Image (cartoon, rainbow, N blue to C red; front, side, top):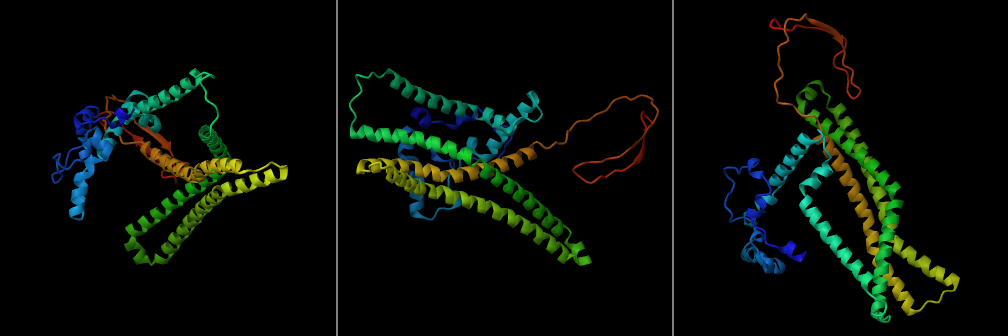
Length: 359
């Protein structure tokens, strides 16, 4: 696994797996030479392990203030335009083969399946190696319990408790997470309305000045801004509740535990208190990180949903439809357009369509 992580990969090895050259061409003013590419591309195993490939940049920074042109660029296969082109190519393939609107997560998985499967394989090998070792060891070869082994027991048990606490806390935080997601959705909608109103006001500023409608639009923008501020305050308030609860939970747990021991008459000595505080310390940091993880997950989920809806919007089809209709009588219909999501545009419009060469 260490060899695969630090194995030198040149640009020639990675460029064959993508076809980004057909999507991206350098501009006239853009440098096409390979001198500005990061030395990490050609760095060997020991150079990557010791960060020796950073020496040219550090040496240059010691002599002068670094500028943008002094910072080396990523190799072409790691740049944003190349990744975007490859992702759109994979998305187009899946649209042609299966469904017109493929799931975004599965598309990303098929795009990065090699790295995902490789990391999962090494994780599985590690878990299986530890598990098989525990199954093969005999009772006769187990040494007696020593202070070092007691510390290992505490570490292992504490890790299991951490996993249990995280699982239970995530399940208990489901309601608070839904509230944050609800207010975040309202915040994004109100922000879109405010930006749309400001854009319309700026685009029609001449008309607003002509009819003296500045005050009306100013009040409308302030009302939308107030609505956005209320939603933002609700999100920050819920996040503050989470931070207060989770940051104070270790202290509360320790106080309740010692008070319970006092009431039940459980003797406390230096060894038991040390083990308890060590276990509590190991649990404390993951518990404190749970609110941030939940908040980041909610924000990413909302943003991802909006991007998916935008990418799944219908596109214009560049194709010509034609055919010989022959001599048919004209078609006369009375129809109306009644949309549920927008205001009706056409109402009871009489139209006549001629077919054939006389149309």
